[in-house]
Image 1 (tube, one colour):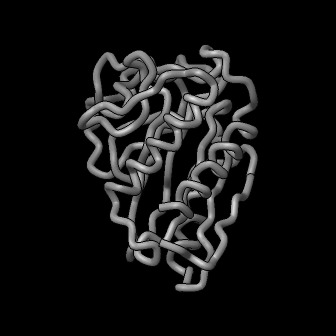
Image 2 (tube, helix red, strand yellow):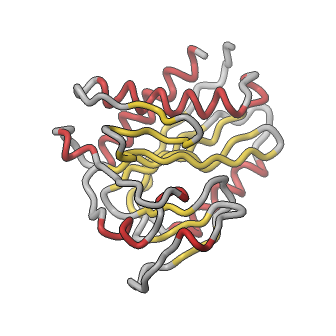
Amino acid sequence: MEVALAPRVRSFGLVDYLPTVAKMREFTMNRTAETPDEFWVLEHPPVYTLGQGADPKFGPKMANGIPVVQAERGGEITYHGPGQAVVYTLVDLSRRGIKVKPFVSLLEQCVINFLSRHEVRAERKAGAPGVYVGGAKIAALGIRVTRGRAWHGLSLNVDMDLTPFNAIDPCGYPGLSVAQAKQFGVKGTAKEIGIRLAWLLVHRLEDA
């Protein structure tokens, strides 16, 4: 569906989780039918986030000094930290005529396509949103839709300390291993890769 308003990609660097969520919420609640969609590229300091209805049994299972916060997105527990590219997708799905499940599929496919460009074979898993390489999760998704407008988004592990994932069952799957782009030879910082991924999302969304 053609949309006249060109989406914007914005880069914020390393920013705390809760103030960023507050800004996302404010943007979503105050946007109008004329507000362009935005893609926010950033990194968070170490933090565990619990999706709505997340089961505490999935962790964290040990004290490591990393804060745990309740998130307004769907899904279970995940970890954010420096070296992980976070792309928040502030998209008016109603205006574009896109349903939630196709939007999630679009996000996953963009990550798969991005990694494919670097000769990394990635895939989906039935019933487990996200993107996987060799059975290890490399990208997580968590979306909330308010009045037909999506917010929150996805995270791609780029070049980070994966140790904090050991304290949780990522996304509610015990024993799930995690991976990152660096180990497959993908070059670039989390910011650089996040911006490239965001523009890939823009182009795919415009073609949807």
